[in-house]
Every structure is written in structure tokens, then in C-alpha cells.
Length: 289
Image 1: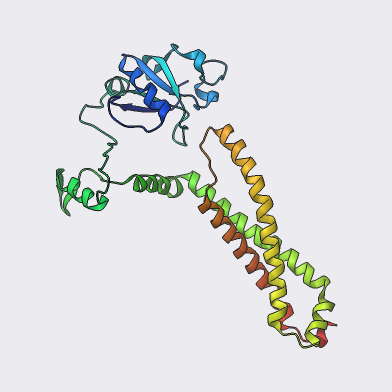
Image 2: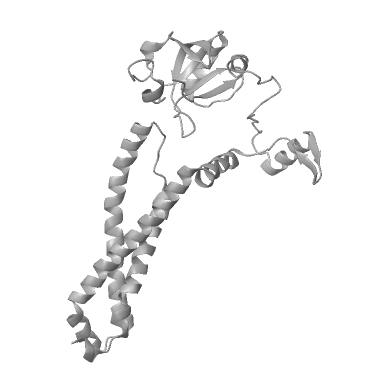
């Protein structure tokens, strides 16, 4: 059974990688037929035998890529991503043997390293002006996109989040989780208000304004948000590790994600609190007893 695999063809003499492991092994692909295989390739699909992950014991093993025999000369680990079940690095000449019809003039991605202190936007314009353009009905159009590393990453994330079913599923899951969480918090706060309606009536009869009562409910919502976030954060770290190892995907918790989730939790709890205390704010003290 054929499986999809990410094949990276490059010139090993170029300064492509910063990872010390790859730098030390990249020259091995100069030998004809030799490749480097990502050890994090999913063994369910691409293991050499019996779904065993690729390891040092498989160095020298002959495998087949698109009908071309290749020898494993080394291993590396960068993660396979969502596009393929495994990854390997080959010499650019062998890449054209594995992928028929891919000419020497075709390049998917090129790396340009700028000198320290260079203005990135000015460099992008100078490089773009030096490249040929295609004449269309809308005027000259560039044949090559000049992007910074951050722009490449953003384009990839935008594609997976907006252009694929995976992104839609995750987005829908987040929206559903927000709605379900808001409903649960509303039920908890509404039930608490109902149980303590006498206390709230007493405070209102004593002259406490709706602002004070609302502040009390919002404080409860804040406590719920913070407490639940702490437990959820601890559980998510465990799930990140388990899912990352099972799916062979590089999943990391970053500060931006932590802040967004915490802000969403606060918004969800405060929204539920505002809805739950509408009855309390509109009621007359005499009606509450």
C-alpha cells in the first residue's frame, strides 16, 4: 500500500538548517541513493516492519520511494505535520529521479540570508525588482513571492485553519466548547442565586444597590474562571504530551495561546454572570421574600 510522504530535495552544501543534528548528517545524502528519514514518521504507516518506528538499527536499510530504491543513511527529527505520514531529505538530483517531470529549473522554496542590520522590506523590494514578471491583463505580476519566515509561517497557518476541513473542525469545536461552557456557568450561577435569594433580598432591602449585588455575582464568575483555568491548564499539558506522541505532531503550549484561552474563559464566565443576574437586578425587595 502506498502512503504519502513529505520528500525534501535540497543541495547539502547550502546553509539550509540550523539544527546541529541535521548539520552533522546532511552531507550523507551526497552519496547516490542515500536519504535521511524523519524518526518521528508515523510507524502505523511508514515503519520498516511490524509498525516499529525508524531507529538506528535501520541504518543501511533499503526502502522504496515512488518506485526508486533508497538507502537510509541517517535519521533526524522535525515532526511530520498534517500533510504527510512521514518525511525524508534527499539530494536535489535524486529528488528529480523520485519525482518524474520535476525539472532542474523548478524550485518550491529558496532561502535568502540577509546581512545583519538589513532593512527587510527594502531587501524584499530590491529582490522582487530583480526578478522577471509575467504580463497579464491586470498588468505585470511577480512570478516569485518574497516572504519573511514569519510570513511563510502565517501563510501555512492560514491555509490549515481556513482552507482545510481540519481547521473548520477545530474552529467549530472551540465555538461549541465556548457555548457549552457558558451554559454550564449560567446554570451554576443561576442555581446559586436561586438558593441564596433570601440573602440577596435582605441586602437589597438594607439599601445595597444593584451594582454591589452585580459585583458579588461577577466575583463568583471570576473565581470560577480562574479555578477552572488552573485545572484545565494542568490537564491540557498532559493531553498535549499524549496527543503529540500519538499523532507524531509538534504540539507546544505558548504564551499567546494561554492568554487567549484565559481571556475567553473570563469573557464566557462574565457573559453568563450578566445573564444570570438579570432577574436579581430587576426584582423588587418585597417580591424576593
